Length: 338
Image (cartoon, rainbow, N blue to C red; front, side, top):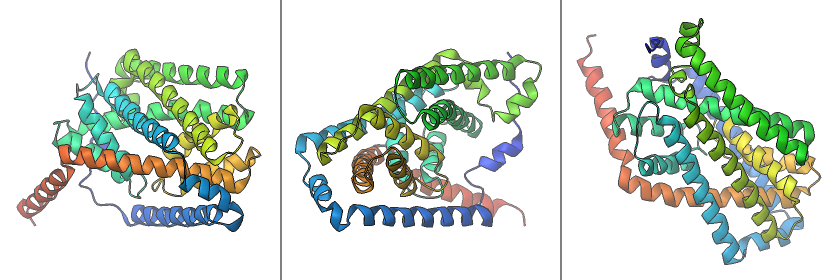
C-alpha cells in the first residue's frame, strides 16, 4: 500500500517549535482566567457556611474511601496511557510503561493553559522514542478523532435522555461502537479510496492508524472502562459526603467529566469542575454537595497525577528533553542566514 503524503503545512502548524500567534496567546490567557474564575466560584460554593458539614466530611474522609479514590484515579491514568499505547501500535511499537509514565505527566499538566500536557507528550516521544513529527501528529490526531468518536454519542444521548437506563446504555454504547466503525471505514477510504488524497490530508495522517480495526476496537473498550471508573469515583465521593447519588446520575456525571475534560480549550482547571457540577444541579442535585463531590474527585485526581508524574519525571526526565529542545532551536536560529 502506498501512503498518501501529508500536507507539509499541517506539519508546520503543529510544530512545537513554532511560536504561538498573538490570538492564540490571548485565547489561552483568557481561557485560563475564565477557568480560574470558575474555580474560585466553585470553591466559594464549597466553602460556604451552609456547606460546612459536607466540607468537614470531605476533609475527614475515611482513609479506605480516600485510598479507593486514589487507586481508581491511578488506574484511570494507566488506562488512558494504554489507550495511547495501543493506538500507536500500527505506526510505532512503544514501551507501554513509558507511555503510561508520559500520560501521568500530561494528565497533571492538563489543568494548565496552552495545552502543555499535549506539547510535553509530543516532545518526549519525539526526542526520547525517536518518533518522527509526522508520526506524532498522526498519533495525536488519531487519539483526538477516537476521543470525539466516544464523546459524541455519549454526549448526545446524555443530553437527550438526562437519565441512565437501558435505552441510554444501548444508544450510548451502540453509538460508540458505530462511530469507531465509521472511523475504520474512513481510514480505509483515506488509504485507498477514490478520495484518498483529500481524506489523508484532512486526517493529518491519522488514517494510517484508524484503518486498523484492532487498535480502534481496543480504544473503544478501554474508553468505556475508563468511563465506568469515573462513575464509580463519583459514587465513592457521594458515599464520603453521605449524599444521595443514584447510579445513573453518577454515570452521567462521569460522562460529562470526560466530555468537558476533552473540550476544555485552555486547560481543565475550574472549567470542567464548574460545568460538571452545574450538570448535576440540572439533574436535581443540591448545588453545594455536588460541587463538593466534583471538586473532591478532581482534587484526588490532581494529587494522584502529581505523584505519578513526579515518579515518571525522575525516570523520563522531560526537563532534559526541554533543554535539548531549546538548545537545538537556539543553534538552529544562530545557523540560519539573516
